[in-house]
Length: 479
Image (cartoon, rainbow, N blue to C red; front, side, top):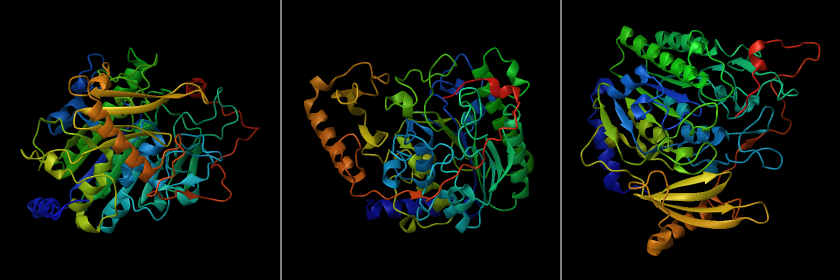
C-alpha cells in the first residue's frame, strides 16, 4: 500500500506537468521474443538498429526493466492489467491447465471485470487501437474490441500457430479486422509493412485528440518471414530485427511530420527474452532464455521517449517492470491514482522524469513460471527456489545471486548469506500464499479468475479442398 505522502507526492508531480502535456499520446511498441542483447544501444555488435538507437538517445533507456513473465500470454496480460499474471488467472490454460500460453480455440481469456489500460484511457477520450499480436484469447468475448480497443488489425496469437508442415491440423492463421477474419494464412513477409501503414493511418486520423496505439510485432518470434528488402540481410533474424527498426523509424518520422512528437510517449520493449538458439537472438550478458526465470527470460530492453518531459540520453538503473505502465500512464491521462484498479505495478513517473531522488518502488519483484513463483529480487539480491528434475523426482534447489556484481547469475552465494536467503524465502512464501503456487499445491488467497467460455471454437477451420499453397508457410519453424 502507498503511504499518503507517496500519493500526494505523485499527485503533485503529475500536477506540475504543463496543462498541454496532461494528455500525451502513447505508442506502445511490443516486440516478440526480443533479447536483452539484441539492440545496438544495449551492446549488440551484430545487429544494426539505428532508429531504435535514436529513440534511446532521445529518451530514457532502462537497464533493469522486467517483463512479468517469460512467455507470451502471461506477459501481455500483465502489461495491460498492471497485475502479476497469477493474480488474474493468466498463467496456465487448456482443459488440464498444461498450456503455458493460449492456443487457437481455447476457452480462456481475461475476465471482463478486469479494467485494462486501453479501457482506462478510453474513459478519458483517447482513441485506442491495437495492431499486431493479441494473444489474450480468440473467442469473441475475449477479443481486443471487448477490452477497450476501438479497432484491431492483426493476428490473434503467435505467427507459428498456423497451418504448416509441423502443424498440419492447425486452423489456418487468421488475419483480423476488429472481430472479423478478413484473410486466412496471410503471407507473413509483407505483414509488417501492412501493420506500419495501418499504424500511420491511425495516427493521422487521430492527431487532433489523444490516442493510444499498441503495436505488437510478430517479429522476432519464429518463424522468420521477413519483408523485402530486409530479407536479403546476412541473417534472417537480423533481417527481422532490421524490419522492426525500420517500422519504428517510420512511426517516429510521421510524428515529426505531424508536429506531435513532443507530446507523444513512445515505449519500446519486449514481451520476454530471446530463445537464444540457432535462429539468432541474444540475452547477453544475462543467463537463461525465454520460458525461464533466469534474468535472460524476463529482463528485456525498455526505452521510453517523451521529448517534452523525459531527459534525452538518460539511463535508469532502477528496477521497473511492465506492471508499471497502467499506474503511470492512467494518471497522465487524467485519472486520479487512488481511483485506479488495485494492481501490482507502481507509478514510476518520477523515474521517467529523471528526478534525482527517485528510486525503484519495488521492495520485492517476483518471477513466476507456469503458476510457480520461482524467484524474488530485492535490491541487488535475487533468490531462486526452483524444482529441478523429472516429474515425481524433482528436488528444490536454492540459490542466491548479487545481480549488480553478477548479472550473469554465475556465482551462487547462498552459503555465504544465510540471513538474506532466509529473509527472501519468507517473502516468497508470503507471495505464494497470496498468488498461489501450482508446484507446491498452494491456492492463493488474492487471485481472481480468468474468463472461460462454455463452447469454444477456433476462428477458422481447415478446408480439406483448399491446399493453402503459400510458399512462405513451408518454413517449418515454431517457437
